[in-house]
Image 1 (cartoon, rainbow, N blue to C red):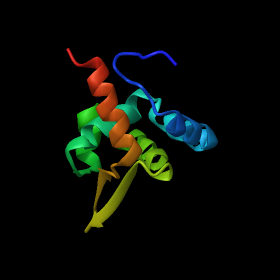
Image 2 (image 1 turned 180 degrees about the vertical axis):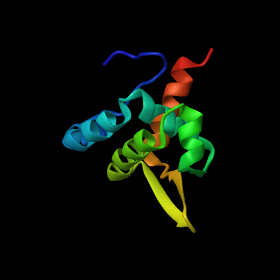
Image 3 (image 1 turned 90 degrees about the horizontal axis):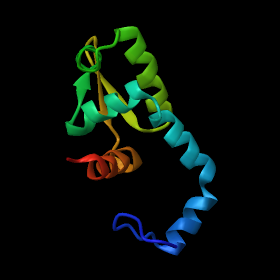
Length: 108
C-alpha cells in the first residue's frame, strides 16, 4: 500500500473497516451534503439551538430540521430540549474524526 500525505493505515484497521462497509457508507452519505457538513462544522465547538444553526448555515428552520433529523438518525448529532428550544450537539466519534481529518487536509 502506498503512503499518501503521511497516512499509513494499519492493515488490520482496513480489514475491520471493510467488514463494516455498509455502516461506513451510510455515515458518509449522511455527511456528503453541503448543508449537513456545514451543520457538523458549526456544531464542532459545542451545542447550539436550531434557530442559531439555521442562521449559521444560511438555511430555513425547516430545511435545517430535516438535515438534523438525518444526522441524528445516523448518530452524528444528538438533541436535548430546554422548554421550547431544542439544542443539538455533535456526538463526537466518527463525525468529529472526519471533520478533524478534513481540516488537516484542507488547512492553508
